[in-house]
Every structure is written in C-alpha cells, then in structure tokens.
Length: 311
Image (cartoon, rainbow, N blue to C red; front, top):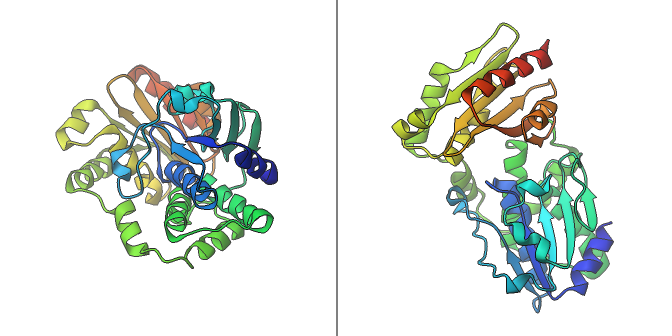
C-alpha cells in the first residue's frame, strides 16, 4: 500500500493535499508534513495544501491559496479525515485521483486508494511510516522543518504521549524525529501556551462542570459565556482535555455553541463513545470523538446516551 502511494505520487506533477475542517496539530502535521516531504524529494512537482487556516496554529504552518485551475489533472491526497463531509474544501472532487490516508474508523471508504490504520496514534505517525518506506524504496530524505511539524502532529494527537493510542512505534518515530534540529521548547510553547482569557475560561469550566455518581461529566459553553471571556469556539475546544484530571471521571462531553450549531466534544477514559458521536452527525475514535447538535434540548439526549455507555 505504501509503495502504491509513493508510485502514485511519482506519477503526478500536481498534487493537492486536504485535511479536515477545524484543523488540529495532527491535521496540519500530516497535511503540511506530507506536502513538504514531497516538495523536498520531488522539487519539480507543484504541491499545494488546501483548506481554511486556523489562526491558533500560526506557529505551525499556513495552507496555500488554491485555484479551481489547480485541481485540473491533480492528484488529491486527504489526510486525517474520516468522511467526505469533513474534508476542508469540497473541490477535492475536481481532481483526477483521490488517496485517503487516515487513522479513524473507515466508515466512509471514499477515494480511489485508501490507507487506513486505526492502530496508528496519528496520521502524522503514518506519514513517518510512509517516509521510511520512501527512504528505503526511493531514497527519500527529510529535513528539520518536516520533522518539526510531524512531531507536533504526533504530540497533539497523543496528548503529549499520555493517550492509550501511544505505542512503541509511536515513541520510536518520535525519537527519530527528535534527532533533527528543531527547537522543541519553542514548539511546545506554541502548542500549549494560552492567553489569559482562555485560562479564565478554563477556571469557569472547573467551577461549573457537572459529574454524576457514575463518573459522567459535562459542561455547557454558550455563546454568551464565550463572548464574556472573549474566546472563539475553536479556542474553547482546546480545553476539552481539562476534565481528564478529575478523580472519578470516566467520560465527559463539552458542548460549545458557535454561530450555527452546538459542537459536541466527547472524551473517555474507557467507555467507547464514538458510537454516540455517530448518532449525532459525527464520529471519531473510541475514546475521543466529535459531533454536532442544533439545540440545547439535544444536548440532554447526548448526556443520557453517555450515561448509558457507562452503566
């Protein structure tokens, strides 16, 4: 499969790489990391990263401006995106061939060539695996910039190596990436330093979350609350792991209201919760998923489903 992907990359002169909407470090890590990897090893190819920029990831990279003309006869690679509804920039279907590289459950098997490994901690880890295959197969090289962004993607999706998805292979790749010359302290500062208003919202979360006797927790962040603390929905989503340290917490959900919907951020220390996410127009990993609901009445249904998952 990896050699098929490499051969396909070699056969196209124009490549556009997509990832999911509302990107996180692994979305950028896998997308931009793969882009820079192809550019380094095939400097004559035109490689573009599509999608809207997330300003909280300014420290990592920025996507490119992509025109309709760019898609003509282009190879499309979509990373870290489980289903077509979540692909950032629907013009991906204007390309001539689509490759899917992902680590989420393969419920939407889109694309002409698929590499899906649910055992991988992150798609950035899969790009490391692809690089090693390219290194032995075609003499691929890596540089400091590529290593930096792939390392960020792995760190982001493993919760600094604390999540159960972290494996020996994950740590092996991370160790190899650290052999390159990037500033790890500067990178971690970009990933984890936050503005005071977000810290104050975190204080609100700690003061107002609820947890029942079975270890099911939730917090609701309305638009009024976000406006009070001057925090965007995308920034508030960075706090989802805040309740992981609460003793007795088994699983929890953040409800974050934005302009047109209520984002549902589900996390768990054991009970499988991605089935609940699928029920509410979402999906994800067994212990970390996302969904969307339209009303606050629906959030109560999500909480009830979460309680059933624990009992």
